[in-house]
Amino acid sequence: MAELTIGAFPSLVGSMSLDFSFKLAEAAMAKGHKVNLWLSGNSVMMAKKGQKAFKDYSHLEKRMKEMIAKGLEITVCEACAEARGYHKEDVPEGMKRASMDWYLAKTVKTDRLLHIGGE
Amino acid sequence: MGAVKLLFVVQRPPYKSENPRLALTHALASQTAEIYMDDGDSVVPTVAFVGDGVLNAVKGQQAMKAYGVTSTESHIKGCLMSDVPIWVCKEDMERLGLKEDQIVTDAEDMGGADIATKFVSFADIQKEMETVQHLLFF
Image 1 (spheres, each protein chain N blue to C red):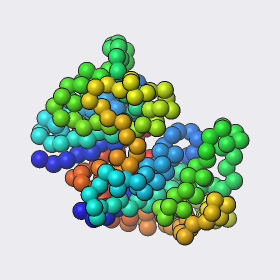
Image 2 (cartoon, rainbow over the protein chains, first blue to last red; image 1 turned 30 degrees about the vertical axis):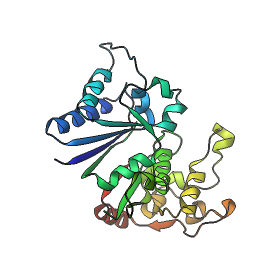
Image 3 (spheres, chains in turn green, yellow; image 1 turned 120 degrees about the horizontal axis):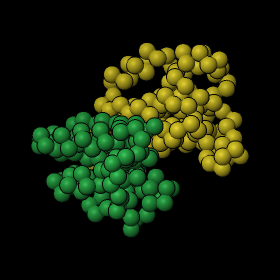
């Protein structure tokens, strides 16, 4: 089993790159790998619980909850979240908040780092 | 594990996306990452500006006046003061008509830095890309 760290920066609605990040994380977990997911920049949109699913927009909250239950370690950038009005009480269960040094520290032990940039 | 080298490659221009700012703030976060790491481990970042990203390093930015936010210039100076190497691609500067005296090279107005911006060829950046453990494109 290897460890994969994904730094995801795209927004939930727009480029589909955040969807890709979650799909990739899910595929790696299905193969038995440990996955750490860092959400920064516009991807902190995931740090708001109670998102409604519409067919016109990407919806990842349900998938994220299932992945957290299976062992996904997911952390959101605290400063990026606060800057956008997403507070501690908004965070979905199982998601952590930290400063950017959490992501940097993960690069030390991870076998692979995949950085998925924002728009 | 010891020291892990990271290269932050910034290719986006300033103020048109959050990417350059995030690259610089993440690179600076290497200074405090040890709270999450084992004794003896560290991360050693370098920030390289390429393509239109070299525009981030132009000095005299008035971001606070124009947008009410800190400038990428001030973040570059913060990196230099924290011993985070800053590289700027010479070929891309030439393409954009930028001279070395138009680029942020020190942090004298913020208390000074022990290191200065390096002007490097893309070949040097590419070599570094092949050397580091992890590559982060912004």
